[in-house]
Image (cartoon, rainbow, N blue to C red; front, side):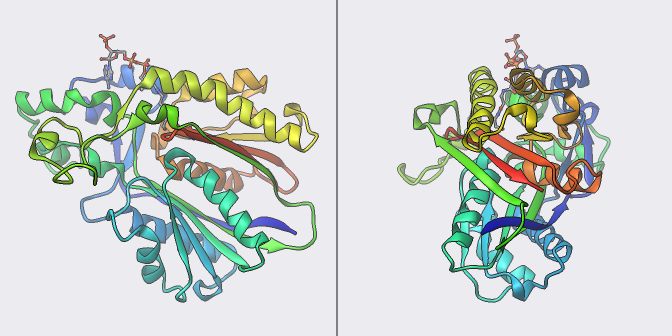
Length: 352
Ligand code: UT7
């Protein structure tokens, strides 16, 4: 038996925000963002549109692409680090929105590795014999943690009046993170197939809690009283913090190793891969992993320039685009890899 991706879909909020627009609301520049991260623009949702909605749109598209109806889905895995609510998770919200049967839904919290972990979980659910068709979703609305006020009106094109110097200074405090993220959703339907070469061949997942502080959010916690304080909001602690350099170095070491591991597990060489789909966090990381693996750039497509880092959505978004543009055609051997907050990382090997 193999777990086969039979459909995929994506959803992008319509507002496209360029680096130049961001440089109107904080001290940053197109040049800095482009050279440090490769990002040129990102999509932002408007207030009121959450990751459950984006994920549902992508999920519906994936179900249609698989030639199925909502009632055919018998389990959901929803990966996000920016859910609509702390509780309940996005799974039940998607179940209601799409009109699924009262099927079980799992909410995953593996951040940038959410889709990878979701693929492994989907495979396990199918292999258990309990389920036939999984809807796996990765969706984010990072715009919810952007601490801007008047700045929002400017980037959404609702006002030409730039923020005050005071607000610009405030927005600049979190510029090292806010310029990197965007909103998006991607989804796949994973089904059980008894015969054929296509399907998920191997996964390797890892966790190192020793790196938990490298990418985390301090400003809300059930271990403190109250859950979030005025002081934390005033200090900008409801925005994730990241030790960028440390995560960068770890990413360019551990992702190539995870890809080598899954290839070795299957008795394959890295050179046998047709495509490596890497979590889209930074173009320099993507190029670093490519170099480590000794692969030509044609085998390592990227779309971070158009979307920024969309956390759990990057891999299904890139996979869908590669299907659309023919790069991920029948028979192709694909490695997926990701690393992010946790630290969680890993790789998956998939035959189209
Ligand atoms: O998806 C989850 C996993 N995340 C990642 O994999 C991200 C990994 N890390 C990275 O991608 C990079 O480390 C960053 C893009 C976050 C940062 O790039 P960097 O080359 O490591 O820059 P840096 O943090 O060392 O900052 C260099 C300078 C600093 O100024 P000084 O201290 O040298 O004067 C920053 O204050 O750039 C400044 N800076 C900015 N300048 C203009 C930081 N953010 C900005 C900004 N605009 N937005």
